[in-house]
Structure formats: structure tokens, C-alpha cells
Length: 160
Image (cartoon, rainbow, N blue to C red; front, side, top):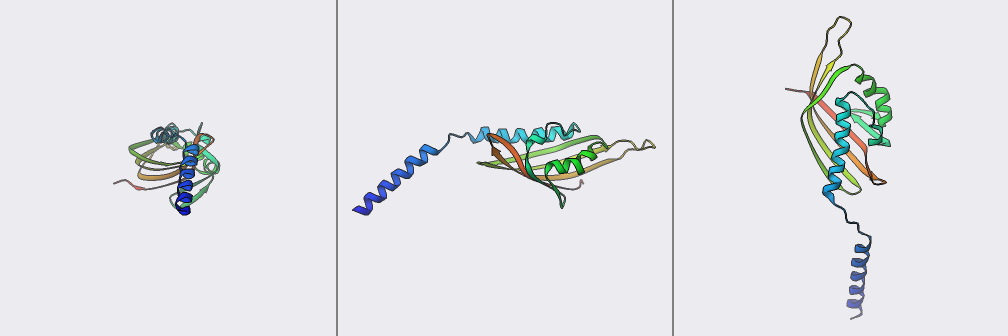
């Protein structure tokens, strides 16, 4: 009888404290917020800018691209993507699809797309177009009520 009473009391305490500390979270709203972060980043790239993108990433973020470790987002922009954007006349995503799963305080995204890069003309006026099929996965974390990218990995191959 003592065991039954103790078990019942423990179950009630667990239920009561669980309800007390749980948050009313609308996962649909959280997913939309995650998708907005990813769209903001994609739109910036298509506009050939990194302006406003640093807030989308944590300071200690990690970027991986096509088998390479690029470092933090700030390092990636300074040493890789930033200089590249200056050589692009156009950077466009097509056939873009994104899936997001929220498991607070984290979210996980998978993006598939085709990207087309048109390079600025060289000294002779020649330009080149690069078309690749790509995939990217990202891990975001909700920090201080704001979603930020913690890790991102992208890879690509020639589009068929």
C-alpha cells in the first residue's frame, strides 16, 4: 500500500511540474521562423550581398562546403564566399525545395536546388555560366528567442 501511495504521489508531482515548466509552443510558428531565416540567407545570395546575413549565424558557427571545412560564417565570408560574390554577375536558385523539422531548441533543414552562376565578363568580354545541382543541410538553434544557424553543409555536382 505504501508503494502504491508513493508511486501515485511521484506521478502527480511529475505531471504537475511538467505542466508548470512546459511552454505553449506553436511548432508551426517556429517552423515558419526557421524558414524565414533560410529564405533571408538565400535571398541575400541571390542579391549578391552578405549584408544582414551575419545575424543569421551564431558567432561560433561552422560552415562546410563540398568536402571542405570553411570555419565560422565570418571566416567563410571573408575568405571564400565574399570575394566570390564580387565575380558574379548573377547567382540564381531554381527548383528550390526546403524541408524543416523543429525539435526545440533546435531545427534541422534540408534544401535541394539548382543554382546558376553567371560570371562577370573577363578582360576580353567573355562570360561563363556555371549550373550545378546542390543540397544543403543546416542546424539552427533558438537562442534568446531568435533562430540562428549553428552549422551548415552544402555540396553540389554538375546539373544534368
